[in-house]
Image 1 (cartoon, rainbow, N blue to C red):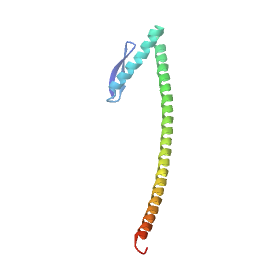
Image 2: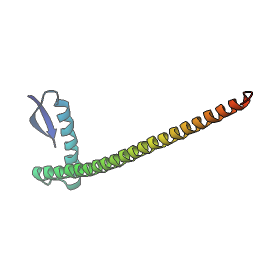
Image 3: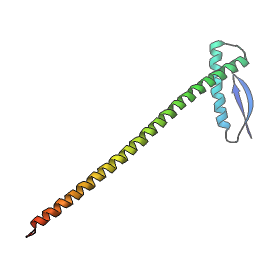
Image 4: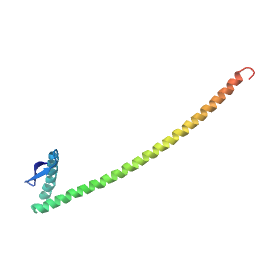
Length: 124
C-alpha cells in the first residue's frame, strides 16, 4: 500500500492508497482543498470541522447533480438506441419490399421479353 501526504487548508495529512493511485489521490485532495479555500474565503474562520463538512456537502451536491445528468444521458442513449433499432427494422422491411418488387418486375420483363421473342420468330 502506497502512502502520500496531502495538504488541505494548509495542514498535511498522511494517507494510504493503492499502488499507482498516488497522483490521483493528490489530485483529489487538491480539488477538495479548493472547495475548502473557497468556503474559507466566503465565510472566514468558522472552524476546521465545519469547513470540512460544508466542503463535503458541496462535493456531494456536485456528485448528485452529475449523477442526475448521467441518468438523463443514459435515458437519452436508450431512446436513441430504440429509435435506431426501429429505423433499422423499418429499413430492412423496406429493403425486402423493394427486393420483392424488383423481383416481380424482373419476372414480368422476362415474360414480356419471351413473348416478344416469340412474335419475332417466323410462324410464332
